[in-house]
Length: 113
Image 1 (tube, rainbow, N blue to C red):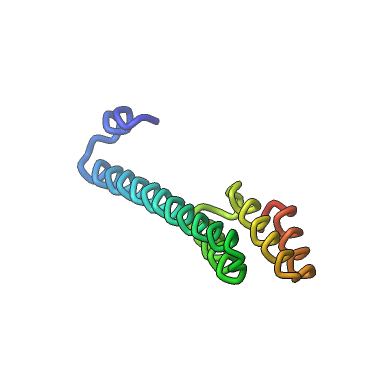
Image 2: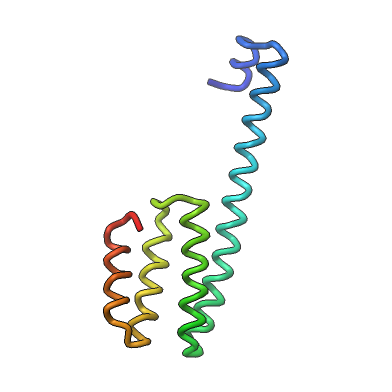
C-alpha cells in the first residue's frame, strides 16, 4: 500500500501520526544499520592493517568486534558474517590455533553463525 492510498483511506490525524511514527522509526533503523556497517568496515580495515603487521591478536579482536556489530544490528543471515568468520579463522591458523580455526570455519560454513 502506498502512502497516498493509506492517507486517502485512513485520513484521520491519528492514523497519519501513526504512519509518520512508523516511517521515522524505519528511517532511523536504516540509518543505524548503515552507520554500523560503515563503522564495522573501518574496523575491518584496521584489522587487516594489524594482520599485515603480524599483530594477530589485535587483528583478531578487531575482526571480532566488527563481526559482533554486524551480527547484532544487521542480522544473523547477513552475507558479510561468513566472510568475517573466514578472516578470523585465517588469523587463528597464522597463530597456530588450529582447533579454534576449525571451529570458526565450521560456523562460517553453517551459514547462520
